[in-house]
Length: 255
Ligand code: MG
Ligand code: MG
Image (cartoon, rainbow, N blue to C red; front, top):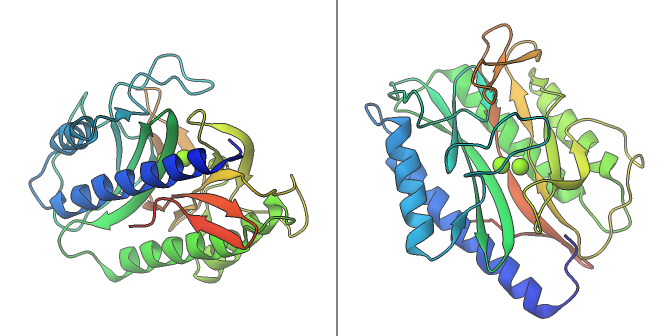
C-alpha cells in the first residue's frame, strides 16, 4: 500500500508495534522442549487478545493450492520459510535455529515481520548465519530511500550475505504489504543499484533477506508450503515492514 494520510500512517505504526510485541513474546518462549504448535497457539492468542486478526491464517498465496492453516510460520534449520507449525508439530531441540514469521491485521492494515532465533546454545556458524542475515536486513532498510530503486535494496542485502560467505535464497524475497499480505513490487534479495521499480514516498514494504549456509537451491515439501534447502544446509530469515518517508525509511515493526 501507499500511505497517503496521517490516519493511515498512525494505524500502520500501531499495527507494527503490536506485531513487534507478539514476536518479542514468541522469541522469549523459544526453548528446548517447546513445540511448534505451542508457539502457533500462543501467537494466535496474543493477536486475538489485542482484537486483531492473524494475517496468514486462511490466506492463499499465489501458486498455493490451499489456504495456509496456521497463524505463524515456524521454519527449523534447513526449513527456509513457511514451515507449518500445527499439522505435524515438532519439538524444538537445543542447537536448532528457528525462523518465526508472523503477520497481523490491525484496522485493516497488514504488517509482516520475521526473525530467526537460537534454541539454547547454537554453534558458531549458525550464529554467523543469523548475524549476517540480520545485518543484511539493516543494510537493505538503509538502502530503501524515496527516489531510489528496488535494486538498491537487493544489492545491499546481497553484498552483506555474500561477504559473510553465505548464499542468498533467490526465489524468495520481499514485497509490498499493507492492503494485502503480498503486493507489488517484489523485492529480490539480490540485484543492482539503480535497477527495478522506483521507490516512492508513502510506500510500505516488507523487506526479508533469506540466506543459506550452503548452496541456495530450494525445494517445497509435500505439504505444499514448507521451503527447504536441497542440500540440507541451514537457513536464516529476518523481516521488517518499513514505511518510506521523505526523510528515509521508518521501521514499522521495530521492537
Ligand atoms: Mg513474513
Ligand atoms: Mg513477507
